Length: 571
Image (spheres, rainbow, N blue to C red):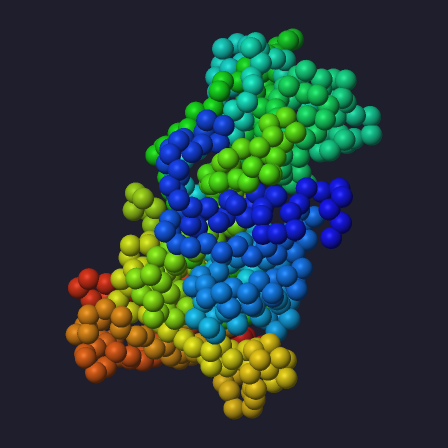
C-alpha cells in the first residue's frame, strides 16, 4: 500500500473514523459530557459496555476493502473465539452469488462455528430490491430514526422566522448576510437546473462570495453536502437547502447549512424576489429531544425484497441509524478548519448495525448456547412495528408511507423482549447448505465455499421451508403450504395459540393452531396454507402469524405476492 499521499496506519488503528464510530456504538464504555461540538450533550455508551472488543481492519483510508483482508479477518476472528462480528460494510447491487461473495463466504464459516454475524442492509433506499448482505445466516440491519434533532432559526430581514435542521455549530457571522437564489447566479456554462441545486461548478463565484445561497434539491442533485461544497469553494457565507425533508442531517462543518422543506424554501425565495436587498441571519442550533415521532425507517435505508433470494425476507431488523453520536478517531480530521474531534454525529446502516451487534452480545451473555439462528429469531419475532405513540411505523420515502417488512424486517429492535422470546426458529449448517443447493449452485461451488463435501441431488428445490423467522412467498399461484418448526426457550410447560393477520387477498390456515410444550417436547412443527382469493397481478401484501401464551408474543412476518394466470381462447 502506498501511504505517501494518505494518512494511514499499517495496523488496526483507525485513521478514518468510521471504525471507531461503529465500535464504540457496539461496545463503548460510558463517557460523560460526550457531544459533537456542543450538540447532543450527555452520557454516551455502547450497547454492550463490558464486552471485550477485537478489531480487524479490512478497509483502508484509500477507500479500498480487499476480499483477502475480509476473509482473513473472518478467519482470525473465528480463531480468536469472538462471539459476535459487527460488519458495517457491503457491496451495492447487483449482488454476487452467495458462493462468490466474500462476506457471504466468511460469514458462513463464522456462523458454522456459532458466531453471530451482523451486517448493514445498505444505504440505497428508499428503492426496492436494494438490500445487501442478504444471506439467511446473516442478521441484516436496516436504519431507523430517533427522537432527537438539531434545529436552528433563519431570521429574514423582514423579521420572518423559519426553522430548519443543521449540524453546524461553528462560528456564525455577527450580522445578517445577503441571500441570493442559486439559479440567479449561475455560471455561464451551467443550465438552470444545475444551478438551482448548486451542482459542482454551476455557480458564478463572484456573485456567491460573502452571500448566503438558497439552493433547491432536484431529481439529479439531491445532496445538501454537494451544495455546501459548491458554495464553500466559491467563498459563500452559508447555504439554505430546500429539499424533501428527512431526519438525516448533512454534516456541514465549515460553513452553515440549514436544511428546510420545499414549503419553507419557497417562502424564502418569495421574500428574496420581493426585496431589493434580502437578508438573513442564522441562530445557533439547539438539541431538541422528544419532539419527533420515532422510530421511522430512514429514507436512505435499503429496502427488500432481496434481489438474490426473494423467498428470504430481508432486512431482518431495524435499529437506530440516523444522527448517531459516537466516538471518532482523533487521527481522522473532520475538516481542514476544525481538525479532530472526540465524538461525531453520523448516519447510515453502518450506524444501525453495531446497535444490533451490542444487543446480540448481551443476548449471547444471557444465552451462551443459543445458535446464531436462534439469536436472529429472538430479535425478529419480538421487534416493534409501532412507534412510541402506538401508531404503526412509517417509512421515509417520497411520499411517506406505512412501513412494511421490506423496510424493517420484523420491526424495530426491542432488546428487553428479545431476551425472553418464548419460541425461536432454529437452524444449523445443514439447513444453510440445503438453501445453497436450492439456489441452483453446483455441488463443487458449494463444497468450495463451505469447505464441506456437498451433494445436492436429493435436497429440496424450494426455499420456502427454510426455517427462518418469517414466511415470504414471492409467487403465490392458487394454494400453497409451507412448514416451520419452533423451539421452546421459555418455561417447559407452555401452550401457544396462533393468531393470524392475513395479508389482504389471501386466506390462511395454520395446523395445528395450538402448540403444547412439556418437559420432554420442546420442538414442534406447524404448517401454514396460503390460498389466493383475489386476482391481483404481482402485488405484495403483508400480514403476520403470531404465537401467544400468557407472557410471550412471537410475531412472524408474512409477505405474499399473488400471481394469477389468465388464458384467453378465441371463439
